[in-house]
Amino acid sequence: MKAYTINPQKKELKEVDIEILANTAYTFFSSILIDESEIISKHIIYTDANAVNSNKTPFFLGGQLLVGDALILGREDFIDMEVTIYKDELVELVKYDMSQFYTDALLTLSCTELNLYRTIDVMINDEKVSLNAEWVLSTFNIADERTKEYFLNELKKVIDSNQSVEEYMKKMAGLALNAAS
Figure 1 (spheres, helix red, strand yellow):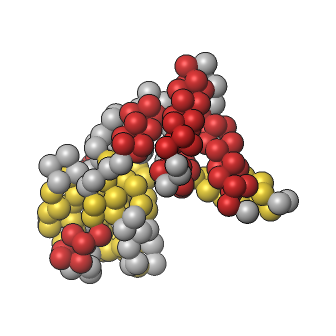
Figure 2 (spheres, rainbow, N blue to C red; figure 1 turned 30 degrees about the vertical axis):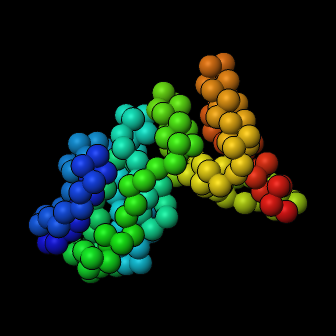
């Protein structure tokens, strides 16, 4: 069955022929901790949930930050199937250039167990908003240099003092939402 793999370290997108089994993604990553992203309509993107703390190479797919190798399959009604997106279209969605902020933030986070895609709930104007650390990084990446520096310095302090990185991300998400409103 036709699938795609992305190796950001080699900056390589390949078409592969795989057999879809119950453990295909787990076997591909040699791990039971897998993240799933639905960035592309009717497709599922699998990545290794340990890629950040393994300091793997990041990249963007359709504007979303992913870390480490990716396996892309088609998906319909929660069933994995052959990809339907053309390779040329997929190539256009992949960006390997990473800002210094992302590089520094991911390197700092590599010593933590933070999952970029696990949702965190933030209260804003008495309304619960579900976000994730990937959104927080994306939001602070477009901030001014002083704000980026503040974010990274405070993140290092949180890690050095063994405080909760998830709570820090929740706090930063709240600050970003309050600044936007």
